[in-house]
Length: 390
Ligand SMILES: [Mn+2]
Image (cartoon, rainbow, N blue to C red; front, side, top):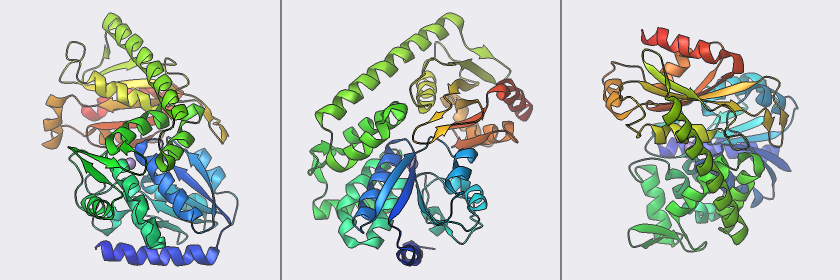
């Protein structure tokens, strides 16, 4: 398995796309910086082929939304930086109705539908945790579509900034090429995008705010625009407002927790932010839990940190979810990470997977994970988690 195999599969996919020759495609994308870069690359690449695109940002693969999206026949749907982990579900709901192309780097599940093609490079021997991001996958596909799209390589690098440890493997290859062709410049220790006049890490941080905090107020669309045209004054002001609002809630929640302390079970310390983050995307709860894991005066070093938040029923550009959901985010304090590595404790995603069996959909990694679950199942999740750990 190699990049050569990926290219062959990309050619096969592109042939199907050309045969379909859609006037319009849907691009379903994730809400973080990588998801916005993925959408921007895919949008620009398809528009260069004369195809109209409509972007649709999802924080999570909700069965109800996906079922609805795939219910009409004869569409062309892209999933970018999202979808691989639920390719089984997507293919089941698609029933050969729509050409569906997944460009992602999360752990893939097999597709059971020949019209659902998953180009995740994990299927070709690379690692989505270290070697490439969702945006890298989109970029390599875009280049297979048309070599002209090599000018979008900088966006693969912005998206890949979510991966700790720098640009390796496929990302290193993308970086070298972008430097050679002048789409990225070295400026001191950092990398700059000359066309947009912005540094890669700065654009990354701003996109993280637009997509996550601004999810319910057009942040994702502004983020995609910023990816392709840079950050204008309007976008910059929006980012400042969003960041200020989030900081205020973080401060209030932290104060509350110092006052009330976290609740505890045998292996878990937890809290419920309920509606405190109303109006912001639910990704903010995970970011707060990460921050909390360093507050050693507040958290214990030997218990998983778990935070709940209510999920607003509204899905922008789609409608209202039928069911009421909550989200739980989990983080692992540093001293426990070693025990997970040694196999003495379950990883964050494994714990949530197990504890939400039958009612939740968990996503994530060993030290950071989240699950969306029916509102009424919060205590059941905690009980199940303790049972798993006991
Ligand atoms: Mn990603």
